[in-house]
Image 1 (cartoon, rainbow, N blue to C red):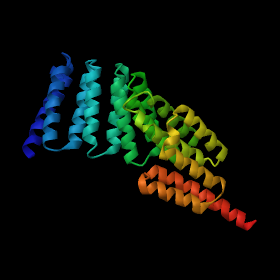
Image 2 (image 1 turned 90 degrees about the vertical axis):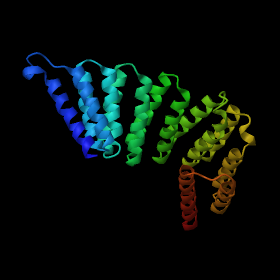
Image 3 (image 1 turned 180 degrees about the horizontal axis):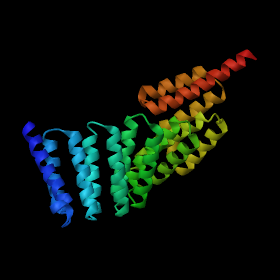
Image 4 (image 1 turned 120 degrees about the vertical axis):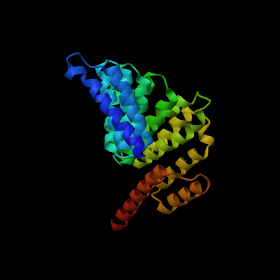
Length: 290
């Protein structure tokens, strides 16, 4: 480890000397040679598992490339800096990846920009910064769409829908889930996920507290996919809607338990169902008091 650190430091000193140029810059700098030396410093810092210093060396490498107008290489160096900082500082990782995204966009590398927007979203997700995570997932989806990468765009869209639902932005979540379902119908790889997307949209409809809206939605989903009415997801939503309409908490609970015993409910669906149940209980209490 110490040997690799010493090597890295030596490479870095030489790189800094080259980037300043000979005789204090009188004869210009040699950024290409400096970049090669910074890359060697990065590699040695990585071998020593000195991730902070590897990240900083990558930033210096990116600056060298940028001065030489090698924008793609500069973006890649910022990306690599972000990957190093992931091991030590999420904040610095995000800053470097964000710079990489902007440079990839400037070079017309939209697919690369989309990938790293998604990665930044995941880092914000780890930090429980849901609003910023949603912002980057949304940006990622838009960029993937522009590159006609439908499957990747849908992955990011699902994240946007998930967090929109968590933040009680139900109309936005519903629109996204319905859009993904519509797009997936004619895709052999994606069509089996349609009923799950429609289930999520339906649960968001229930959270809005409008039984008429969920009834209309179920009719619309049947028009969208004629096979949907034969699925457990459709029957589940229809039974939940009936329990809500009857303001029957016990019936609602039984319907959820029966579905969950066969198809395990994930965290998002559980959260949405609890919100509906809490609203039913509140209505029941209100009726008891009047």
